[in-house]
Length: 318
Image 1 (cartoon, rainbow, N blue to C red):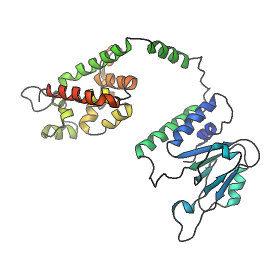
Image 2 (image 1 turned 45 degrees about the vertical axis):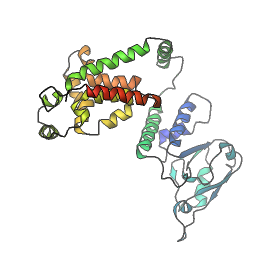
Image 3 (image 1 turned 90 degrees about the vertical axis):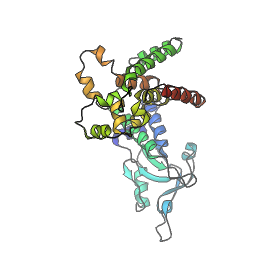
Image 4 (image 1 turned 60 degrees about the vertical axis):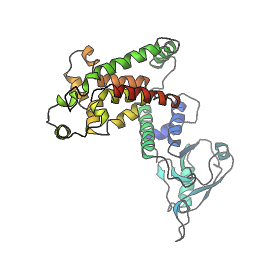
């Protein structure tokens, strides 16, 4: 919640220079966590009216914290929400026992960055933990990568090269064919991993040694899920229905899925000789495809996709 040193450098940008773009993106991600960061660089009053915490026995929740009552110029131009909770001033965390004199002393500095928590809507408990984790990871990455680096220029590398490739690909009619061709190669590579006629276990499981505990349990059990028995179905779903976050979470669903999607990938990568052999690894191709093409299927495509997937499942030997 309280910005780090590098994050505060980004949030405190008050000019229209290139670093301000990093500040805007950082604020955007923090807003996903219901955090509002405001910066004042000009001398004078802030235009903020704060209600002091109520520390009586009957006060609960936000009543025991510093709350925003109203705004006046210049703060009124920021359209802040009344009832927002003041969390920090620069690096100092604000709590119910922080005296008004201490807050006044800290906000007198310029520039000064204040962090507020937006009031809960309808008593909601906030966003899911997964969304908060993604926002936290992103803001830390932006803040740390910004520190000590020169600003990126859109007409210089690497942005210029990426822009040129994107412009060339946007008008290329072969992009759709390339996407389908790469997906077909991934599915062909794992087509033989499933169960064969007369075998109760999938091929990929039979080829594994029982050095890992989960392999022995999986071989002794007959309760493998349908996607583990037919990895082509799992790969089909990941290719056309997942983004990179979903792919990573799917790999954590079970030991079998972790092995199929990314388990042992590092060892397999190091054992291959030559760049050409490395590029043939199905897991590598899967992750590369999802990173490039994998925003997930649109809602209007879901019915047709699942029909196609279940049709392929019916054709898979069990």
